[in-house]
Length: 353
Image (tube, rainbow, N blue to C red; front, side, top):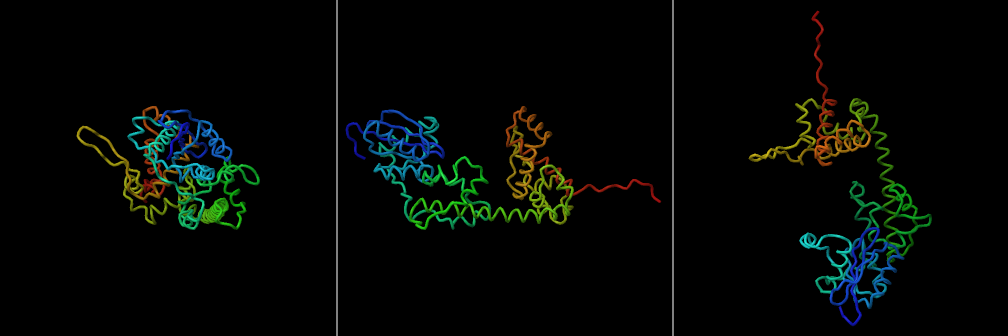
């Protein structure tokens, strides 16, 4: 990187909605920092602002392959030298703190000193992500969502569409909007490639939502017939009830106690005491799908059940964190589910004939 009189170096800390830029001179003195939106106009304003401080020798960008991909593409088109900057290590963050201006100045200093010298991927040719790779994970509920795709999208695809804005849409409306996109035929154009990927993701999600709705309609009468008392519990829907029935099995009476069922679901705290310390730790074993089902019941009750809300408020005043409260509630729910699935035998107290 060459340095001449009046030259400056920029640094950018990238985020999903905004980028924070900073400028230093050729000896590392801080000039100014400012925040810009992640839009085409924001990118132009950022570069204009950088050049207003002098000749820009280069710009260190943190997150060139994620939130900074579109900015890097624009700066490269304008002939700006870009240096890929790694995120500061934990030791640096502990000693110097963490904020957007601090990170932006750190990126500029890393680019100026040569500590960072990597060349970012161009991401404007054939070596882009393949939507086919994500098909399996999306089918299993683990893949990307159109709302997760702002990192590489050209700015124009994140800021406008034929019927308005994409960014402020809720997930359902975003999927519908992306499914209506009409990409062109030239997949070598990054904009067309991104539009194609968004449309494929959206149509895939719509197909999966339709399949899930059909499965729920089929599952609801089955679980209602198999365990009506379980479905009647607060926060227990067909999917959650089905998972708990699968976990308990066809013979839930084999579970000797509620503690055994709690261990099966991974919600029984494990002892971790030593010496004068008496404590328990989180149980990471058991059926994690059943653990997830109990977690969903707890979240539903925290939102809609006054008794659960009162319990959470009381435990919060006692100093418990929200994860700790949720773990306690999952244990209570496991007890309730156990006694619903395995009802206590009734004793016939009527006099013998």
